[in-house]
Amino acid sequence: MSAKDHKLYFLLQRVAHRLKKEADAALLDSGGMSTAQAAVMTIIAEEDGVSQKYLAERLMQRESAITTMANRLLKAGYITRTRSDTDARAWVLKPAPAGMAALRSIRSPFGEINRLLDEAFEDADLDELARGLERVLDELAKTPADADGKS
Image 1 (cartoon, rainbow, N blue to C red):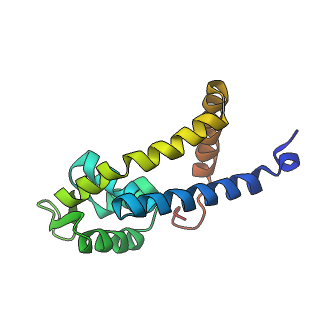
Image 2 (tube, rainbow, N blue to C red; image 1 turned 180 degrees about the vertical axis):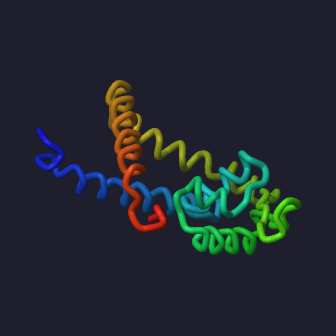
């Protein structure tokens, strides 16, 4: 059967929406942050200091969206923001202790989401699904969503 026959796009949209809704609620309860904030915090923590431009490129977002997110994380006390030593126009974002604590507190809710996915698929199916989704992302990267290549 084809993607059209399975209504695959519609199914992916519904699943993605529901997973995000469930994960957002669980993360807000446990760590006081959304899944989008968790993604940004994870990158900042892993890299121990990144520019907003780097985050925008890595997450395929506009810099203005990252600026808004950084302001929220800064206000929550989850990150620090200082001027770059190499580019006076750029900010360097680093994790604050409260942000690291929040990241630790969301491990369990993310674990539950992953457990649900593990139960829904056989290992081989998960492998094939992951490879297929990576191929879709690769194909989408070849044709930017708009003129500047970001959605």
